[in-house]
Amino acid sequence: MFRVFIAALALATLAGSPSVGQNVGRNPAFGTINLNANFPNDPRWVNVRAGGTRSASSVTSCQGSMADAPDVRVNYVAAPGFALTFFVRSNSDTILVINDPSGAWHCDDDSGGNLDPLLKFNSPLSGQYDVWVGHYEGGRLIPAQLGITER
Image (cartoon, rainbow, N blue to C red):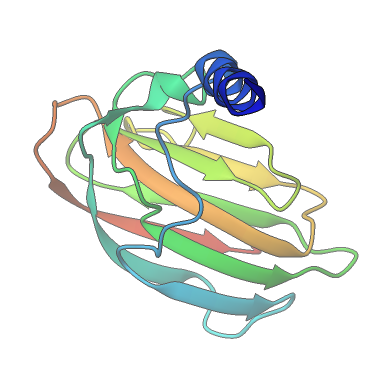
């Protein structure tokens, strides 16, 4: 009887849990970058393939498709006076989704101009930033560049 109760409780807990499509526990598809505030070679560029089969709306207010695993992971050591900005360059309409070190989700569509997204953290936290680049063209993958700057 006790086992049945535990099994029912576990099933009820799982059924009531929200489903999150993006998985911050997976390894990033296009690598990990370790940066300290005032990093050299600014901006840093990473070539990615934007998109995927997951809906961005499962974790943010943005629409579009993106991958399950992060595209890029940035481990950042912050310092006062340095803002951290992520942006995308592509020939398609892309979105940018970031899970910051506090676990908060951020999304942008066109703030970088020319249908390109941009997310700026004026007082960035130290820690892990998981980054996804998505788009509006369904599940196919498209070439894009992720830029990371303090400028």
